Image (tube, rainbow, N blue to C red; front, top):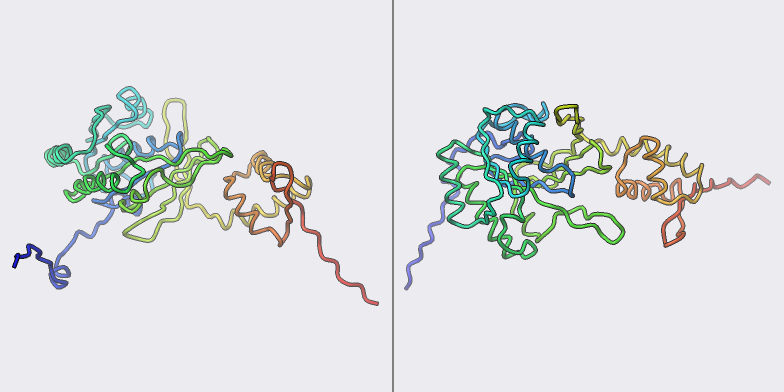
Length: 326
């Protein structure tokens, strides 16, 4: 009979263990000793946000003057920007030069067992507890669309977290579809989402300074409500301004009468036309959010028909007339 090497632990052994009470590198947003993935479309501001997080963690100061951070050294694994752009952006974000932030840039480093072991040894020797990776595709070493290859690279990344290192990875969203809209989810195998502890989606709806950050997944706590940010650009520096939690329900309630006014003034207006008009009036709303909002109003206060190129056109729903008394 072959002797088994299995040595399962008991429940009483588990419950007798004591774990640190602090679970967060950035309170509520980035779990301590976990894997967080930050994804979005091109030009959404992912690298800017990653660098802002690195600066706050290296300082041990509040992120956006709002979220507590756990102070530690930071190592940037940069395969996207290069030294010139890192230099420019850190100066723009007013990062003090004495911060414990280190970087490796454009090394074409694929994650292997030996490379990860080197990272763990270096981080231990240099008191670094936070690694950022820009971006996943550059260190993947396989096909991000296959579960097997993605599971392999995340097993290596998990070695970092098992060594007490928090990891933040930048990843990209799907490409534009035929109608010009982008997919709302990350690229690659579903095993990527399954492998991370926290998933953050950064959206820049109108290519201006306005951003939303949605916590799509949080393994350790209920997902935080979507927050709004303003990436404010001044003459010689830039900064992230926290605007608060996104209260979509309240915004929708405020927009409904405005939508009715626009449709009433232009019966048969298309969704794209309605979106453009709302933007002109200063009412920012993502086109997908507008579509959902119109769906809640259909049959209640508006009707729709198909027009040119099968695009829906919207009209005010006629009021039902009460039968007259005979």
